[in-house]
Image (cartoon, rainbow, N blue to C red):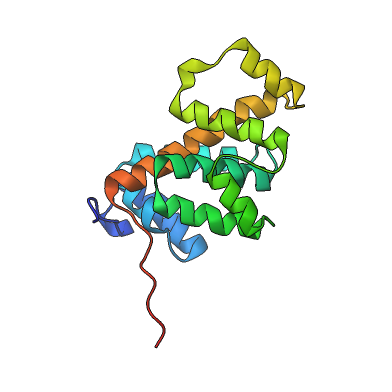
Length: 177
């Protein structure tokens, strides 16, 4: 059930109106989440800037999608899970890769180590030790990648929590006639 409504540009606060108008002119629409975030110009602007910045991570896209799937499985955002499943398949992952990622694992031990840390960043960030970072380094992960995992998890938490709080859910499939 929707708890906050998506806004049209003319309904939004001034700064959000500018941002939404620009997005609609460039892409044709802003989407449910962004249009709903428009209630808060600070949130909308911050999300868009953070999202753009996180597109420059060095984590390979297929692995980033695996991490996102594991995190969204944990948070329970169906809308985000659906979007990341689609993105994962577009990035070349198999259905089996997607299934494993949703369980927080991969067929690659290096990836499983990083995905596991990502889930812990979300679920139990106070649990990390020096040994945890040493294990990631032993798997060949750079400090940059280790740092970027926190950003990727944070972006997923932001979108998932926002969608869950506001009641944004995937559209029900319409039966074929």
